[in-house]
Amino acid sequence: MTASSKPAKHAGKDTSTRNEKASKTNIAYFIVLLTGTLMAIISCDKKEGENHYSDVIKPQEFPDDLGIEGFNFPEDSTAIYGWLEKRDTVSITRHAWGIWAGLTAKSDQVFEGDSLLVFETWLGVKEISKFAALGNKSGGCTPLKKERTPLSVPKQFIHAQLFANKNARIDTSFQVYETVSYNPSAACYATENLIFNQSVLDQYKVQGGIGSIPPFPNSAITTKPTYFAGKPNNDGLIRVPVWPGTPNPAKAYKYDVWDTYVYADINNNQPGNKKLVPVTAAKPTPQQIKAATCNVSDFINYKLDKDEAKYLNLHQDKGSAQFKAGDIVLLVGMHVGTREINNWTWQTYFWSYNNDNPFLPSSRFEASLRPPSVKGAAAHYAVTTSYAMVWPNQPVNGGSNEGVTPIISFNPYLEAGFGPGVFSVPNKMDASYQYGVQTNCMTCHAMATASGSIGYSTDQYISMDDKSLFTNQVQLDFAWSIQGNINKKK
Image (cartoon, rainbow, N blue to C red; front, top):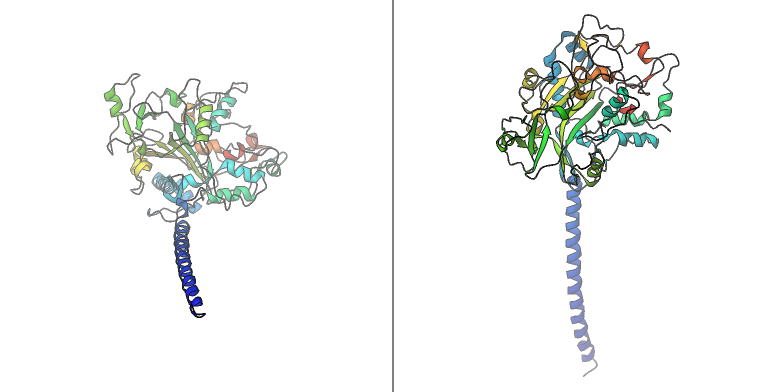
């Protein structure tokens, strides 16, 4: 070989090696590029629809435009006071339905595979109270939730037992549970003011007078969703007690003595718009059960996680079937307060098998005003309102119980079981009012003070400057939810 040929030979070998390496490099580069492109696409998808990939929940604002003619939120207080002056129950009821439409509108949040409704995205009071305990004033203003608001035994049930007998052995075995949540406006107010901290509440005390916290903003909404937890039988049916109407004469009428049931099919195999015939027999026939069976999708519902299932199992009677992750709880009622007027507006929704002609405290009239936009499961609920304590409406201070008529409004799954002894505030309007089925949300929430010592009242007018009730108390702007979650050492 000549000297010149050797390099050529070597060059040919080197060129082959370089080409092979280049080819491998190009393939690797292509794989990296392709992977990067795919990751960018996924990243972009996450950015555009991150809720589908997220393990957190961003609280959503009440919808701006629900497409309901004449509905505004928050409504101008003068408009609402005008309705009250005229006893305009049409406008009041339409407003309550508009609030329901907003609460049950679909949000853009998806959590653990569930598309959340607007009210399901809001911070629970225990979460807000924790922010306050940490001194985190902005915690309620820009939050992200890491879980659904946990279920808890209704505070009213515990209060009722204590008010009736301060030495009572507290029963905590129930099938009805609640969550209490604030919309973003109310949550932000609560943490900015650290209103759940005892030391802050103490600053509003007035020795020998009546103290009060700063009022919530007029856009504030508080909710108390009420859920029924029942185990399905072997056929996949959950037996659900349903409200049979207000008893006459009045009596304590808890859900476990109604003896009126429907069955919710967890497999959703029932025809739509089925007219239900509830079961009232102690041992119903298969035909009766079939006639009383609806779809679980006729209820707003969700699936328990393992922690919630564990919590429910702690509050079941011995020998009861145990809950597990994936079991379903059903929304059966909801109290809702909005701070659109000084005493708040109060509306309560409860599930009804005859939703176009529901029993008292709702009515066919109120059902007839349900807007067409309220569809699906949300349309199976009845509404009852208490925008005033009595008719005619009385002023915030200095009104009277003389010459008035009652406004009855309650959640059958919560208050209906209360009887004599629970209501420690004497009724000046009608002394015979001693039962939960004779209550009004506004009257009861007027009693919310930091000490919680005043107790409950059946429906009557309460003047917010009543010294016999409120001297040396700190009024909580109608929010019992604060009293039940105070950080005592903060």
